[in-house]
Image 1 (cartoon, rainbow, N blue to C red):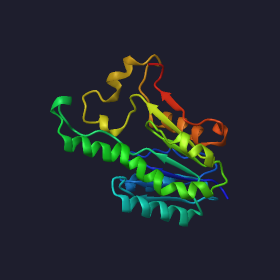
Image 2: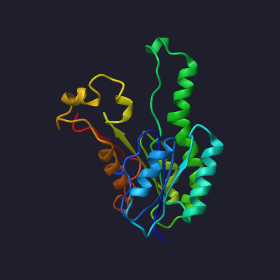
Image 3: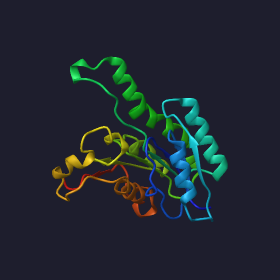
Length: 213
């Protein structure tokens, strides 16, 4: 069976995410974008599905994971990409309810997705892995099960959240020795490596995708 990857994402979904040898399922808030990516994949030997998922809703997470495991025959890789910020004032002016919303999205969302998928990962024989685009403490506890847990910590990435800012993400390109800000495909390449068998002896690692800054 080909490896099966479950990716929890939010916002823009780009064709750079899929990697060779994977059947993909995208649980995402941007259902139309995910469907467009799935339709654009040319590997007809594998299934590519897109479903709606809110990582802050436990029931929708559990349903999406169950659907992925049933529809694709299992789960071998989980990539947690959903996350972001919300409008708030200065640190000392930010109310508790704003912090709670950000924690639900950026912390508990990852917890929910990992928790729902771990049982499926334990049954996998295709080098099971979790890749979080954030920090993680799961590596030590899941290492005895043969499940690798790594993280990707990107710097400035050109996402649509920059559209509302004058100059967009490019206004920060002078900060990077490589002379540009990151693209979603740059993060995708790091995720694909950490999720692959080529990274079979890497766990508890945070990949700094920062263009030398």
